[in-house]
Amino acid sequence: MVDAADDAFQSDFCAERLKALGDPLRLRVVDLLRHGEITVGDIAEFLETEMVNVSHHLQILKNAKLVTTRRDGRFIYYSLPKELFQNVGKAKRMLNLGCCKIELP
Image (cartoon, rainbow, N blue to C red; front, side, top):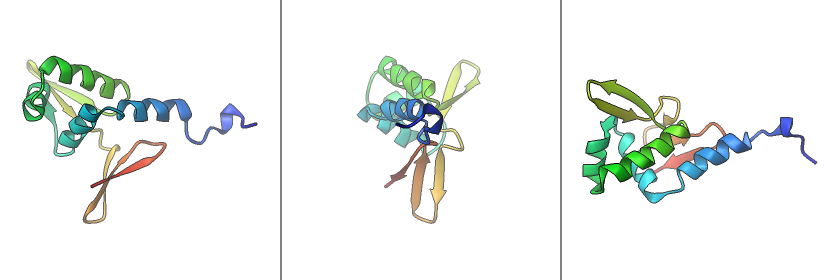
């Protein structure tokens, strides 16, 4: 039997992050954020969905530490944490979740 101290995957942490990415709209949000910080209103416009829906999904991503925020006046800008999004070579990019890496097209 494996001891909890030997949890190389950091199972709870990893499962929370993978679960947060397990929704098509949230994956589309992450894809948009690969290009830089953006407001919830702009995300909603790009994805042609309601701001309240986008806000809900951004909160899930934020709770999983997959997005960060920056306030500028009345606007909140969302972005990917620097350590999450990585360029690997000329054409390869990946999300480094800490427990695993996802190669992006």
